[in-house]
Amino acid sequence: MGKSGQVENLMWKKRGIIRFVILGIIVIAVFRVSSVVFLRHAYIRGDSSMPPNAILDTNDAVRPLPEMYPVTKGTINIFSVPENNGIGTNDINDAITVLRFDKGKLEYKEVKKSFVEQVSGGDLCFMPVFSKEIIGYSQTRRFVLFNIRTGDFREYLAGNSLDDLITKVLLVDSERQLFLFEIKTFPNEKDMTKIRILKLLELTGEAPLEIASLTTGRVSRKNEPWALQGKTLVVYNGASRTLHAYDMAFKETTSALTLIFNENKKKFRWIDQLYIHPTLPFALLVDIALTERADYVVWVIRWDTKTPEIIPILGLEKEIYCSRFEFSPDGSLLLYRDETEDSKNPEYVIYPIDPKQPTFLGKPRRLGKLPRKTAVAFTSAWIVEPLSFVVTDGDILYRWNLESAARP
Image (tube, rainbow, N blue to C red; front, side):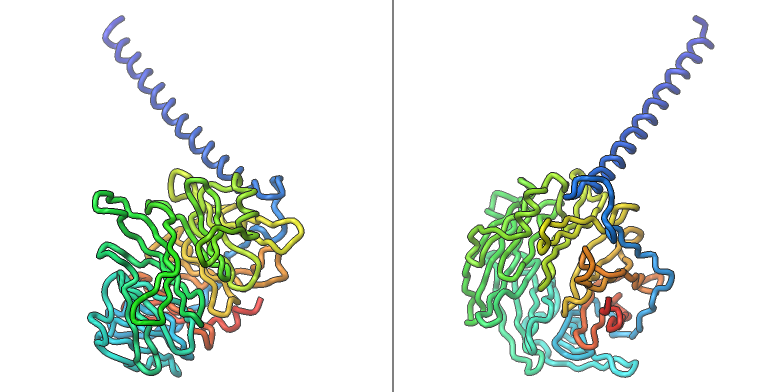
């Protein structure tokens, strides 16, 4: 074979390899898409037909613009407070400050300054409103209970080690002052893989009293979410891909949600997020791919019907990245962040809660993104009265009044 023939033969081989690679990519893509579609359609009824109202259209033509209020530069941490038309921050003048929206203006009311070493700073975690006077927030391993009316406060160390990090706090019992803490820490000096511990602490005295403790696994790139259903703790276990229920002594028990999920666990891949409505018999679960944070599908599970319902509501027709679902303080709205196009400035979407619907969710409404092109959404807060949602980008507060949206 001549030199030109060898070159031509080599070119054909290269083309063959390229075609093979392209074909392989196409096959993998088709397999992935078809697998996701199959998983998305394989819900409890066992067929591929979608139930009425399963796919919720959020393509609103008009996005309501929020009210915009300039705020002291660097105000990136805001939180809910038990005060009408107001939110709180600990970013201004080393103090707890109430920011009140009044007739198009923002009023500042400093409650107390420098009452602990660094009122702000550290890894912050803010609680939703749980009292008529008290707010709660954590800073790395310190937890502060603060009276927004009087300025009185108590501080606690919820962790035992300097490596402990509080990542979530919920109120369990207001009379007994029982709080449930999620703490991430190292198991020992040699093991550098963090574990997650759930601690139930009574905070009535000068020091926290531990009621119960539960280690729920190692911290990894994948979430193993948990939520409270009344006084029942529901935890997702990634190793078995099952839900487990515990009472407030952290002894294992059962619940309608865990029973339904575990009987149908093969319909799901990995549960990344878990949210349970505070009063109604339904939960939302965010299901993602096993190998990567992709292919999000959001499901509703309800347990008040003769036949348990598992209904997909998002991620069926187009790819979506969504996070931080939350119910409004009165439970009348569900809000989530659509990060499909932009994770730094996501779109906010709300659903009115409607018990007449199979999913408990009414027609959705997109609030949209923060309108400034350079905006980065830092933290957010609910206002109880009038029902509103507020987001900060550090320079501007964006407030959506949602009173009318709460009606399905």
